[in-house]
Image 1 (cartoon, each protein chain N blue to C red):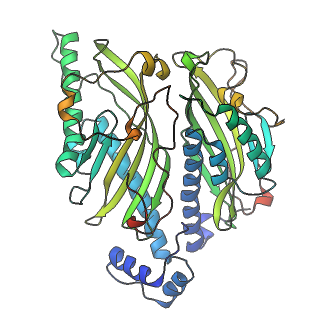
Image 2 (tube, helix red, strand yellow; image 1 turned 180 degrees about the horizontal axis):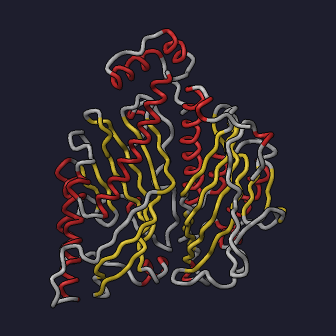
Image 3 (tube, rainbow over the protein chains, first blue to last red; image 1 turned 45 degrees about the vertical axis):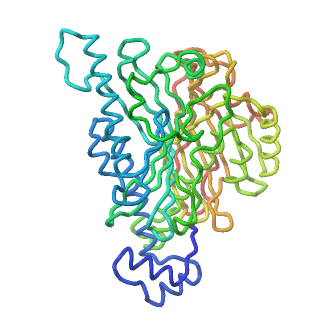
Length: 265
Length: 215
């Protein structure tokens, strides 16, 4: 990790991480030359691994409908915690993040359950029967800050979803491809999701081209969704459109030392 | 012959793990630019500025940082102004080996990708386009860069279409490139007439670049 740091930063970072200052001559000399002490380098590798696992947990919890567990992965005690969802908008602050991570998927699950009741009126199906949503994480790009207090990362996710189709009034299988841009922050010495940006690549029925879906057969949100929408989002939340030129989203994170030197997802 | 992990110093082992993280980031950066149809940006940000740098897509070999750039600028011009183009080659299943000397590395990935070229013949131009990658990497001024980027075709199939037929000639990505490279590199597209080979060759631990193969 090519992040040059100085003596003062080594001491400050090591106090934050280990509870004591790395003041031995070798560490200071190495820092003076732009090299991090070995302990800090190992810490940052461990941080990257923790971040991988944290984001994977988020995906597994969502698949299983464990939205409260997913919510606990967020930095709910840190100012500016936020979620940006395609079609839904921007949610900022603890209560709004709860809405995005728990209330929105629960609303979608209830709409699915109601659809299944219409399809199978004589059967007592448990909630979420027929749903299969998986978000595998691919193409990781993880930058842990030089001060190891925050990190930035992005992934591709080539997923599947399976739920009641409002437009076709049947159970439907979808390709659901997206990209994640995420800021992480160390809260009470645990890595948490601070800013979550979900950029849609496309969502389409499994037999249909996403070009056709976008142009001719748009997918619909269930009735009542407007009440749960967040603040309007930017172009980064827009779904694939054959009339639009694609840009680099999420923005690629460069190495950085402290969060004030970088952008927010 | 490479040192085993247990015979390396802690410093060497940490440096190798850092290299793996940086190389995964490097490959992600290349694909992020590519996803925005900015192949020139991808090239400039990730390829080593050397005469022996090689880009080898679908059997074509382009050699030299500047020559590769010329080709990409040419193909970018042919794509300029087009909307609805979508290229995404997610990178999965990496095996990365860092040389004992810490100067080069090798890696392979599977890539379940997709491409949109509205107006194309397949499913309105929406195609699942899977590749495999073999990379050589080199440390240039302390930063990891791509030395050789060898792209192997797996399948190209329109949405809802099978790939278990005769392979269509060329792939959408190959068509987007100038085809004036040297057609001398191995490529391994799916064929119902042949068993799938192990390609790219998997990297093994090694000490220096002199003693290993090139992708």
